[in-house]
Amino acid sequence: MKNLRTALLCACVLLCAHFAQAQNSNDASTQDKPKLFNAIADNVTVDVDKLISLLKSDVGTDVSIAFGTSFQFQGQVVSTASNYEDRINSIVIRSTNFPGARLTFSKIHDNGKTSYAGRILSMQHGDIFELQQRNGQYYFIKRNLHDIVNE
Image 1 (cartoon, rainbow, N blue to C red):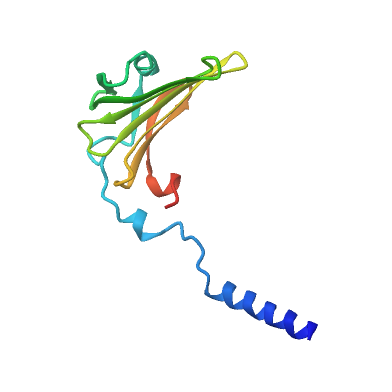
Image 2 (image 1 turned 30 degrees about the vertical axis):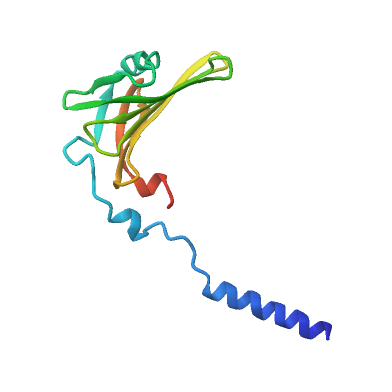
C-alpha cells in the first residue's frame, strides 16, 4: 500500500511538471506593446543637478525638465519621500506629454557616497528609459520593458 501511494504521488508530480508552463521572457504581452519613446534617441544626456532640484518639489506641483537637446519631460509631482534620516530622497512625476509615463528619481546617501537611480516608464508601452552613469556622466538609456519587468 505504501509503494502504491508513493507511485501515485510520483505520477501526479510528473503530470503537473509535464503540463506546467514556465515563464517565457519573449512573452508576446510585453513584446507587442507600442513604443512611447520612438522619436527620442537611445542615449540622452542627463544633468543630475536638474533632477536633484526636483526633489524639493511639493506634491501637485507642475514641473518641466529638459534632458539633452530634444527630450522635454513635463508632468505633475504625485509622490515625494524622504526615508532613513534623509539618506534616501525620492520623487515620482506623472507625465503630461507622454501618456501613462512616470519618472521616478532617487538620491541615495550611503557610507558617505551619493548615488542616483531613476527610470521613465509606462506599463502600457514597451520601452523605458533607465538612468545610468558612464564615465562620470549620467544618461537615460533606452531599454525594453520586458528586460526590466516580468508580467
